[in-house]
Structure formats: C-alpha cells, structure tokens
Image 1 (cartoon, rainbow, N blue to C red):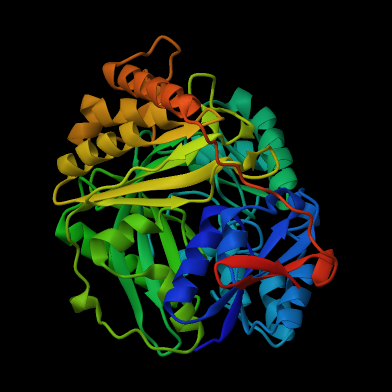
Image 2: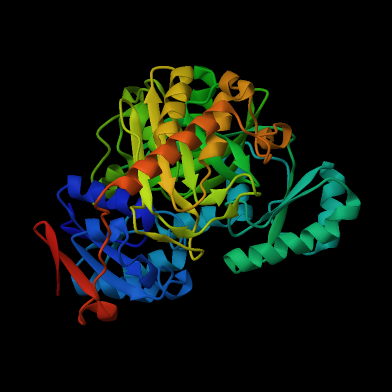
Length: 503
C-alpha cells in the first residue's frame, strides 16, 4: 500500500479522495490555486502546495507542476479525481515516466475509450451494441449530410475527443447540418483542443443508464449495477439514482455483462463507467468514462462498496476480494448536484461568498461538499459546490428523504439549484419513475412563476435562520493569514495537531 498520495484536483472530489486515503492510513497531499487557499480540501490534507493562479490552465491543468510537486513531497501516486487531467493519456504517461503510480487506468485504455469514434469501433468489434452512426470522425459537413440521409433524421453530432455535453448538436433536418457541424466543431475545439465530430442516430426520449465497473490487474472485472441519469439539462446530469426504476434483474445482468465486455476489450483497470441509452428494453453503448464519476456515491450506498478506496487499492496492486455473485444491491439512493446556478434564470452561474452553510443530517443522508462559510465562489471552475445523497429502503422513501434533506439545507451567499431539486422531488412523473432524457423539455419546472409550497417553506425557514444569526452576539469568521515563503510555488503547509504551521 502507498504511504503518501497526491490528489490532483480540488473541491468536493479532492476532499472525498483525501478522506478515503486517511481511512486507509495513507497521507494525502493537496494542491491548490490562489483562489483555493482556504478551501476545505486544503485544510483536510496532511500537506498542501500552491500550484499557480486561479485559472485552471495555470494551475490544475499544469501536468508538469503537479508531477514536480508529487516528486518533491515524496508522494508515490497521483489520484486525478474527475475532470481536469483525469482522462488525459499524455498526463498518465508522464506520471508513469516520472516513476509514480497513476490511480486509474492505463494511458492505452484512456486513449482507446477517450476517442469516441475509436471506442465505437472497438465496441462494434467486441460485439457490444452501439447506436447506428459513423466509426470515424466526419471529414466535413457534406459527409455529415450524406450519412444523416442514410441513417435518417434526427441525428446527433458529437465531439470525438470528449464528453460532458460539450460539442453536441441535435440535427432534425438537412437545412441544419452545416450550421450544426460548424457549431459542434468549434465547441469541441474550445473544450478539448480537437474539432473532430462524428454522427449518431438521435433516439427520441431514451433513458440514460450507466453501469459502474471495477477491475484489477489480476483479471477480475466486475460490474456494480446501474445508475439512472436521465434528469439532465443540455446533456449535463442534475439528478442521479441507483438502481434504475425500470430495469429488470435480467436487463441489469445483460447490461452488466456488456459493460464488462467493453472494459475487457481495452484491458481496463480501476473504476470506470459505461454509459448507455436505454429504450423499450433495448440498450446501446454510448461511451466509457475512464475515471470515477460524480455520481459514484449512489452506487456506494446501495452496494456498500467504497469505490474510491478500491481505486487506490487496485492501483497499489491488490486484487478485488469479492466475486460478481457476491455483489448485492440494497435499497435506493438518490443524488442531487448542488450547484451555484440560478435555476429560474436558465441556470446562469451565481457568484459570491458563502455566508452561512447548514448541512442536513439524519438517517440515510450523506453530504459530499467542497464549501464552508467564508469560501468565495467564482467563475474559474465548475459550479458544483457539493452533492447531497440519500439512501432509503425504497425509491419513494428515498425521494421523500431527499425532499426533507433539501429543506434542511441552507447555502447563503449564492443562488443554488436547490429550488429546482425540490420541485422535481414533488413532480408526479418523477415520483412514478416515468422519466427520460427529455424530461426537462416536457415538464415546466424552471419558470420564474413556479412557487410551490416546499420552496416557500424553505425560503421562510432560511429567512428566520438568517434573522436569528444576525441577532447572535458573535459572528465566527474564517481568518486568513499570509502564507510564508518556502515550499513549491512559494507556499506549503503541513498539518500539526489541531492547527497549522508554515513550513
């Protein structure tokens, strides 16, 4: 097992990895930009190093700086979290070349699955069902028009080099092709540095279901069941749950076997996710995410398996101690992404300083958060502040528990997506499980006039809490002190008992 690892990320996922490391008896090293000096992941780590200014291109995306910090502090491995450099094969290779362990798959596996057209081709060769479309990137808009005519409209143009909803355009007619091709390519270039796009048949109203995988270097590749991720906006997931409300045990087994075959086709190692589209009993390979997923907690809660700890254990050479037959699923889990966005204003980002934070507690409630009072929320990074996750014996009980937890949650200082989540928890179709990826297109949940009872209750409670807080004689504040010189990038910190001291 490792003695020390570096966490090459920030926010709630960095804190999640640090906690997993500490539970395994491993020292954890944090990195931070100038905007994150007082972030929770910095304070939780055994050591923390400044790596650059706030823009991610000058800090969290500096592979050379991250590797140098790891070598300087004596870390044996690097955990990338998700986003940033987590799926960059050149970074993984550079980590290996530096004599360090990358906690994740090989650069070859990431390359094979990172290029979506190459991944589709591999899956077809492995007998995995895929949505009809091209196996190669499109040469130009003329080729896109020809292929779309062959497979039939509507079609979906997708970035070959990435995911997360970037570089995607739905095309419903020939007159839209050229404009959509240019727009998808431009967005792909900006997001991934590669403007290549390919084309798929666009399925109207499928469900988005993904399969969680774990694989070790000893030949064990297992699936941990499915997650339903159909509640999304512009291909960005908002609410996830496990298990799906519609899959039968037989369908789960078939999809799990398909995902395992996909992982074995690229000699995958670590935690990964195969994403699928599901419609009327049929499912299709969409892509593979070669990292831990944002929504991994719902799988952890229904299986009892700590995915982040097993990422670390597998990277250290351990074999998975359980078989496919020993994996079971208990109850139902739901995750809501708590983002700094205004749901009543097209989810525009909201910025400001967190003035007050009240985290829900109680049976079956989990908070994976990356904020504390005093933290400044800006525009440099993803707007996700935290994840609120609940677990209960049944899906309806989980929905009701989530509603209760959302009503307890207070995040003051920025707008958040909480009112949206509250409305979804009360919406009849969601409660019935009759959802698909077009759910938000067919349900009026975001209008400014929306003002259901739960939101009004939450607003009133927040106002009363704020009034009570103002009347208190003392107001606790996070005190910031200047960092001493020394260490990498001019600032390094080590934990010393209950306090902190410069080094």
